[in-house]
Image 1 (cartoon, one colour):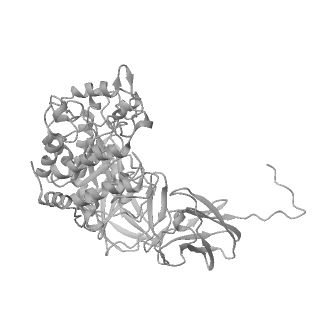
Image 2 (image 1 turned 135 degrees about the vertical axis):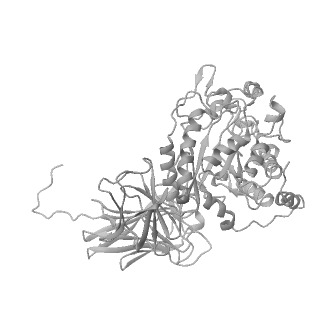
Length: 587
C-alpha cells in the first residue's frame, strides 16, 4: 500500500507527541485555487436501496443517502442490507478516467457517510466494505492509487459527527435514545480513530471533507489538529465546525447546491449534485445537462469559487448513463475552453447581459451564454485598453475590438461556436484594472448597503456561514474597512442604522461610520453568541448635496478582538410631515 514519506513522518510526530508545522494557508490552498473543478462521489450501501425501502420511496429531489434516517431503518436490518453490497462492476481507473476527461482536477469519495459504514478496510470498526461484505476490496485504496497514476488529487469525505450505526453517534434516536448517548465516547472510539486511519494509509490526501459540523469549537479543533499533525498540506473544509459558529478549516462550503450572489474574500466551494439526490436513486431522473453544468461552473469560478460536482454510482459500481452523457459534454467543452477556468480569479465585473467573465493575468475571458443579436459584445467596468480578441476554441479567428463611451466593444460572428457558452479571450494592456465600483442607487426608501456592493480593505473580509449568511468580518484595526459609493438623488434627512452580530468579547469596541464628511462613532453591543443579528439606530444624518458620496465603516482603534459580524448599513429616507394645509394622501 502506498505510504508517502510525509504521512509516515506525520504519524511518527503524532506518536511522539509532536505537531508538524503546517504550511501557510496560502500555500496549502494554491492547488485548490488553480483546480476549480472536482468530482464528488456519494456511494455506499444506500446505493443498493436506490431510493426505496419496503415500498417507501424517497421523494424526487430528496437525498437517497439519507434513507436510513428518513424511514428509521433499524440498525440490525440496515446492517443486513449492507452485507449484500457487492459492487462487482466497480473499476477505479474507469471512474478516475471519467473525472479527468470531464476536466476535473480532484476526486472526493465518501469514506464514511452518516450511515456509519466505512468504504475502506477499517481496523476501528468491522462494519466496513472489506470485512462486512463479499466484495473484500478497498475502494479508497484503489481510487487513491488510480488518481495518483492519472495525476489527479484525491480526498475523502468523512461524516465526523453523524453516525446512525454507533450507539453514541449523532442522529439515530429510534434505536438509541438521546438520553443515553455519550458523544465523547463515539469521538474517541470511532470518529477520530477512523480519520487517523484515512490520513495514514492512503498516501497524501488533498483534503478531508467533513460534514454536519461539531457542537463546540474545541471538538472541531481536535479534527483540524489531527489533520495538521499527520498531513500538514491536506486541506480541511469549513464544515468541520458548527454551522452556527465562525469558520474553521481552510475554505468555506456553500450550502448544498448553494450559489452566492457575489464574490467572497475567502476561498470557497459549492457542492452540487448532478440530479436531485446525492446517493443513487432509480426514481430521480432530473439530470442536469452539460450546458447547465458548464454555466454553473462558469458562474462559480467567476465569483472566485470551486465547483465540486457530485455523481451517485449504482450499487454494482456502474455510473448511470445520463451521468456519462453529461460529463462527456462537459469534458468536450473543457478540452476547448479549460484555459478560461483553471487558475482564474474572481472577476470584479458583475454579470453582463450576455453572460459572465473570468480573469487570468492580462486576459479577460468573456463567457457568452446569450449571443448578441446585433453582433456586438459590450464590456463595462474595465480601465485597461484592450489589444486583441479571439475565439478561445479557434484562436486564429481574431475579432475586432474598439471602445465607445467607456465600454469595450467586441464584434462577434453571426452565430456562436457553442450554444451553451462560447468563450472569447480578450487581451488587455497589463493586469486587469477595474473602473471604480458602480454607484449604489437608492430605492424609494433609501439605501441598503451590504457585502455585495462593498469594497473591503485591509483585513476586512466578505465571508459566508451556513447560519450567519453573508457578512463582513475579520476587522481588528482602523485599516480594516468596508466602503460603498452612493449616488444620492434626494437630499434631506436620513436615519442611519446598522445591523450586525457581536459576541461578548466584542462589547465596547468602538467603530466609526462615515457618511460623506460626517462621522458617527459607536460602541459594539453584545447581541448573543455568534450570528444573532440585531439592528441599531445610529441617529439622523442630513445629506445636503446630491451626487456621488462615500459611506464607510471601520474599527476606531486596533484590538486583538474582532469587531463584529457585519450584515448591513441602511440610510432610510425620513419623509417630512405634511404642513398644516396639506391634504392627506389616499391609502
